[in-house]
Length: 308
Image (cartoon, rainbow, N blue to C red; front, side, top):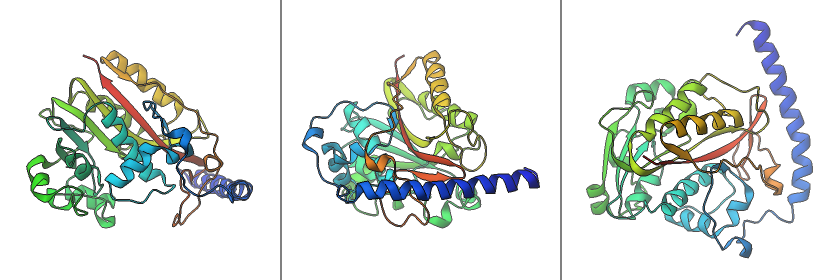
């Protein structure tokens, strides 16, 4: 990017943050009496999850509270916590979280999902980048990287003897998945494939990860979603932002591989917090949406079934 391009990008980002601040004042004024995270009786009947963005309504559901307890966290309005709960709920709905099932996790870092899944009887093969590459990219410095089984049950979510029996670990490059990672009942990744370098590489990972599944298996992934635009986005770099059209393209390409992306739903949500955009330093919820450069982003969950 030339100097003019950098100046233009910074100006657009500054303008965007100022607009967000004005919008947030209005949204918070409406939210003052409604911000408490409380169970909503209307959400006690759970309908199967679809592939969709993070929305406020999910935080009042019984399933959200259930999985927060499973990962040892207090429910809060935070999209990263939502990603963990979304993945666990989607896998549970597909009958994956039980004895006899085999799961494969990509880019697991220090996330609680490995231990929470093992605690329910499934066996898990966890993977992450090699230590040198993770250090170069800054993941190891922020405790967002794992290089052995030992760091994946730090909160004792699974009894240690059972954890050791059910969990294994290896280094894996998500841009070059090993051919021996096959015949799993389920696969997952939590906010990882947007860091593979480009939109194209991220989409390729989702397709390649489906090859790791046995017929009838399911993959659940979360990633960054561009709420604002279906045209202009960040297509390459340390973090890319997927648009509606990228995910629709993925749906078509998965179908050609004998896989189905379940019911793409782009409804943004009608809650007050679906309008609120958190700003740095991101120390306190609500944190469902945030600015990234001149875009508004949130988390998006994808559920892929391998049909044949």
